[in-house]
Every structure is written in structure tokens, then in C-alpha cells.
Amino acid sequence: MPKIIFFLIVIILASSCKEAVSGTENVQESQWQVTDGLPNKVRVDSKAQTILNNWKDFMVLESSFDKIYSTENREDFVLIIDELVENQKKMEVGIYPASFDIPQIKGRQKVFKTYVLKTKGDLEYRQDPKESLVEMITAFNNLRNQFNVVVNNTLPDELRANEEN
Image (cartoon, rainbow, N blue to C red; front, side):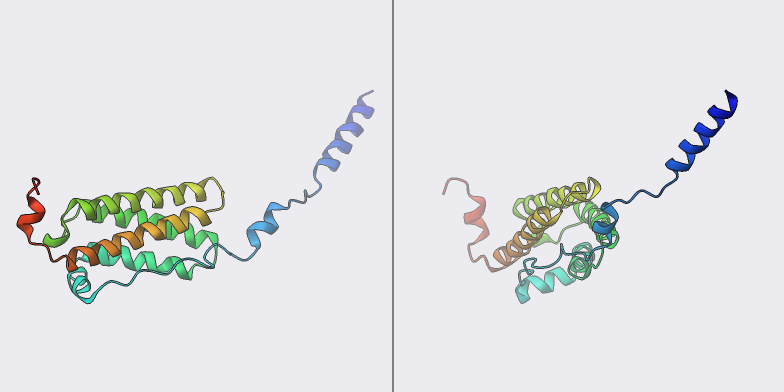
């Protein structure tokens, strides 16, 4: 009887040591296709760009944002999104330039933060981040476009501050 149990255990162990073929490894090794066909960044006017060049927190955020377009694999993309989260936090608590320290800029920055975190969540849960990445780029473009609107606004400050008009 003990010999039969010993042979059964050996057979079970030998059959369980076979390599399992999984299709998920092939998916992970495939080419990183998420960054194909992403929207381009909105151009910032020269007036706004001169102000932005002096705002170090935004320039750091923008340089890490530009890395999105050159990622080749998932691991690099995860690191870039983590870097974006950290740089966005620094920008949020940092000092804004006087002309950009308004609710319109801060609101668009919060929307951008929301989509960065949504993209990060998609990556953590191994979902396709393409849709949330496009939304994040759109939110960043809206932030950049708001810089243009603020700089090119020709209304006097008195009219904008007066709520009765």
C-alpha cells in the first residue's frame, strides 16, 4: 500500500511540473500600440510662452508630458504617468504666475489631474489606456489653450471683476 501511494505522489508531482502555456505573455511582448494616433499638442502663443518659460513647475510638467509620445513599452509608460502625477502635484502646490493664478487655469489643471489618475488606474488594472490617454491629452490641450485665451483677452480687468455687468 505505501508503494502505491508513493508512486501516485510521484506521478502527480511529475504531471504538475509541466510548463503551462499562457497567451498573456504573448500579448505583453507585442508591440506597444497605445501611442499611435494620439492627438497633437495645442500650440501656445508667443506671449503665453514667455510667461510659461519662467514658470518652472509647468515646464517640468510639459517635458514629462512630451515623453508620452516616445514610449515604446508599457513599463516606460507607467513610469511616465507616475512622473506626471508627481509633477502635477508640485505644480498644484507651487506658485502660479500672476496672470495665470485664476480659477480658469486651476480648474483645467484639476481636470487634467483627473485624467492622469484615470490613465494611471487603467494601467494598474491592466486595462487598455488608449481612451483615457486621449482624454488626458485633450485636457492638457484645453489647459494650454486657456493660457492663450488669458493672454489674448482684451477686456479690461474692471469689466471682468464687476459681477453686475
